[in-house]
Amino acid sequence: MSKTLLVAGFGPGISTAVAERFGKEGFSVALVARSAERLQAGVQALETKGIQAAAFPGDLSNAATIAPLIESVRRKLGPLSVVHWNAYGGGGGDLLTADLAEVRALFELPIVSLLATLQAALPDLRQQKDAALLVTNGGLGMFDDQLDALAVQWGAMGLAIANSAKHKLVRVLAQKLRPEGIYVGEVMVLGLVKGTPWDQGNATVEASSVADRFWSLYRGRAHVGVTVT
Image 1: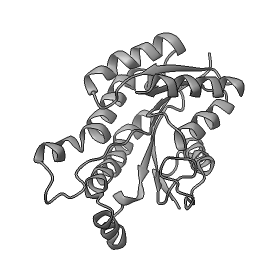
Image 2: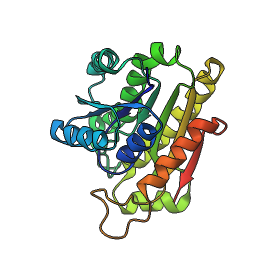
Image 3: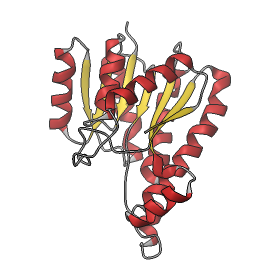
Image 4: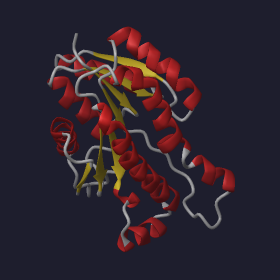
């Protein structure tokens, strides 16, 4: 039976490239996103490349629905070997005026739902050779004066602190799971990704390059993360 990759937060760009990269290496691919239409198109595109794939519509922002979703993946494609977390949220653009409920919600998707996904997948990951959690993150989460200024200028203060929290989560999970042989790694993307809705012709990051970095991290298992510009 082939290994199974779960792509949590499937869409154009990085997650598509990761699905193709790991699929090329023999992984079956489970695609999760809210849009059933997007998922079906993704499955068809992967299948034309000879990659086994299946769609699992779901709202990852609702942590209570994640365990049943993971069980559906397990029944259809077998136990999970790798989880690729690519989901992201928004809100809290100006933290000085944001409603506090909105501020609390900033951490639901990148922290609570990521952990819910990992917890649901752990029984599989603990039984798989070369199991891994791979996380896409944004450069605004880095500690850098210029990036902090950009987060304020772009009205992305909430995204910046959510990404920072996710960055720390990755690192503590890496320490926690390393003794069990489960690799945790992260690619911090510092720039716009070509082919995504944010690409207005000035994007500099190739999604395939990010996918290659994820593959290298997964195979090497020596470093917790890298930055791509």
